[in-house]
Image (cartoon, rainbow, N blue to C red; front, side, top):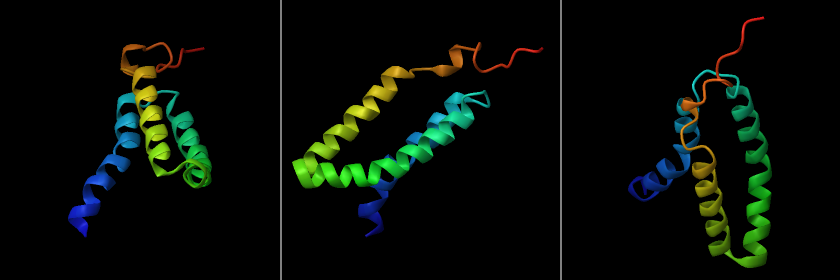
Length: 89
């Protein structure tokens, strides 16, 4: 059972920690935690509603599209240092 569940667990569990490591310790880190918490609460009932209405294949397609959108929107955030480093007063 572990051999069956482990690949899915890695695929679902790695994007957030990898994203945090790419963000660094800048000012976006609290926002990342807040958005992760908010979307974690909203995503479960929304996925259930979509699955009941349209099927599980649509839920997986929507998840794939959202992950790809995030990869396109934030390709390498460490290149933009203006929002990572707070400016001294």
